Image (cartoon, rainbow, N blue to C red; front, side):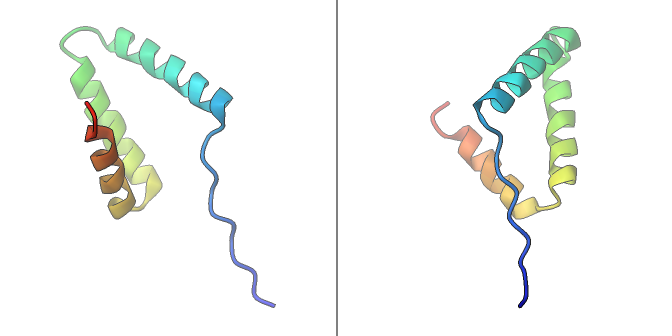
Amino acid sequence: MTTHPTPPQGLDIAGLEAVYDRLAAAIDQAGEGRSELFLVKLALLSAQASGDADAFMRQIDAALRDL
C-alpha cells in the first residue's frame, strides 16, 4: 500500500493571532519608511520557504482582493 504525505494544515486561530501580533510588532520595529521594504523581504522569504511559486502568486491575488 502506498502512503501519501498529508498536506500541511494551515494555522489554527491561536497560531494566526500569534503571527499577527509578531507581524504588527515587526512592522512597528521596522519603522516608518522601512515597513514596505520589510514586508517585501518577508514576502520573498515566505515564497522561498513555501517552494511553490504558483501557490504564492495565488496568495498575492487573494491578498489584493477587497483592499
